[in-house]
Length: 238
Ligand SMILES: Cc1cc2nc3c(=O)[nH]c(=O)nc-3n(C[C@H](O)[C@H](O)[C@H](O)COP(=O)(O)OP(=O)(O)OC[C@H]3O[C@@H](n4cnc5c(N)ncnc54)[C@H](O)[C@@H]3O)c2cc1C
Image (cartoon, rainbow, N blue to C red):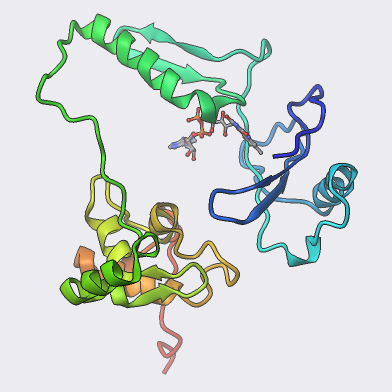
């Protein structure tokens, strides 16, 4: 990870490999009032290109797969606000960067607040370990062949770009909390994260979601709420 010197708005533009082998370049940071403003802009991308170029020459920006923007809620003192603001109501607000890195510690702190507030006792039978979704790519050829023999869904590639199998998607849907939308599947398995940005696998993932959840495909959303993907059929007029 190549950092630049931090500025007023944070840690500056960095160039970093991801754990899955992609390259991540950015971010920029500006103050905005609009709480829905998650659009990327040409000016922002130009700034990323210019500033990342100071650290790494000739980055292949033309090979960009996708670009993102996010909102960072902050309060004037730029401090995390964590506390029980009303009896039984714990607030974790203004969690700016490094809120992601701090999340486990914030979780432990909130657990303590809740424990003291509700006078809870630890459950000795609680198992805190959580088994991840099995990724067949991490297995040897022989192990993978045995898995596919036992569970053929692991032999069906649904997301070609990221080589995600039907078995992983089924696992993502049936675990707790299970995926209910295309983005839910994407975040758990990477289906749709690759070069084609879900162009190929979206209909396949929708089919699997509908089948496994016992709902009609028209009920499947991109990310919950009103983000429906099927809004009608184009033969209705006939
Ligand atoms: C570009 C960028 C780079 C960053 N880099 C880093 C980094 O390198 N390291 C690091 O540690 N941190 C980083 N952060 C900061 C980190 O992402 C945040 O600190 C962290 O995500 C805050 O967690 P949160 O749960 O408080 O809020 P969020 O992650 O913002 O979660 C709030 C959730 O509430 C939902 N929501 C909002 N309103 C409603 C509503 N009315 N009803 C229901 N749901 C609602 C939102 O959709 C969202 O899912 C970065 C942030 C940005 C934007």
